[in-house]
Image (cartoon, rainbow over all chains, first blue to last red; front, top):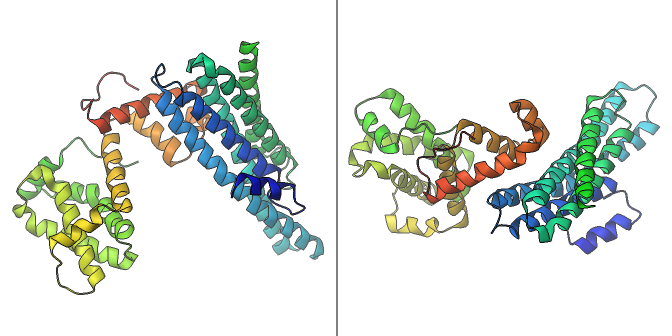
Length: 190
Length: 186
């Protein structure tokens, strides 16, 4: 899908893509920015090619999660609507709904994790890449940290995720790690 | 992740000729995915046809191993046998097609990818176990830095850099610049 088409669909009144897909795309953008910084630093940074490869892998996974999130979110909403019309306490309906909600939580959980990885890679690029591109690495970290935070929030508000759910703990850990690393980068720049 | 032992193809072939069953098992293990990949990805054979090709190729390897002139050229030889057998399967007859017809397939994108994947697999075997493990976890299992750090008991902040260094060594292996793969214990 072209970027313009994605933005058009994002603002349309349909269900998907939504904030999960937007967060995933943000991680992909951030990772590609890191790849750019590393590519521009090949002359002075021996690990740059390896960082490029990782950044592209993260970007590809984020793009796949953007598509997955849109699909599972629509299915979860449909299951919610079905559940409203079903007999209260119907175990089959409850099971189906829980399955859909689990799938809907898996995508943002993965996005939060990828966001944290993108921030870690951006941090490495900021430390070792060409100084000229340090601001781009910091910008990438900020984008990815924001996406991780947004994705963790989507896990938190998922109806199938309880406060004691280990998935929520993992999402929040990703959010925290990404936020702290990004803050360090901006602190170093100030 | 399965990886090659340090034994070369030529050594395995020589041991197979001497009747070493372990060597034969290792040779089959080493090349089973390769043969299957050529059949399925290179020639788009069905699973059933690919299985027939697989059985036939290794039968031929077993019975014709004495005809291999250069033991170090086992890989191109089994590739050739596989391609010819795949073409037989496509043609739907028992007739073996001439070798010249095979060349057409060698330049295809899928065949190139298979060869590249195999080359990477071979190069990976030249890396330390830690490097193989960390690359497999990140690129094949899609594990996060956090998970890798936790499972390998390595500081999370060093994972990306370690992966980058391992990729550098993999590149050296692929380019043949560092065949000994000595030095760092990464």
